[in-house]
Image (cartoon, rainbow, N blue to C red; front, side):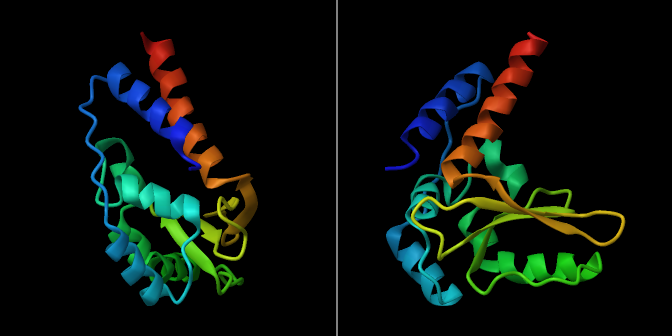
Length: 158
């Protein structure tokens, strides 16, 4: 299990924000259908994330990281890249797993990079866009950065 610590910190964050812990999982059948749709094996850490929060959770809703978002993520990401005039391509094994509502960036992993792969980010720039490779060393690290950043911000405000 890659996300044990992430889930613990998420529980702490929910208590801190007075959120009801509302993670809605998807099923293993959902993941099997996703893999068939993508033509890729979904890395273990992303499977674990989707089996935990694949149908939504209030805190992550602004990241558009539900199973349905992952399902359509590649197509939407390519449209964003084209809109910003990016000349590059997504790797063939890219799985887009979050896309904040600002729609000027998205994060993806590569199915070929192991069970808990690095997270790469595409973001808009004035000259079209850029991919920041290895933005986070693993999915686990990315999720922890996201959660811990909110904990720090909330703690400073109170």
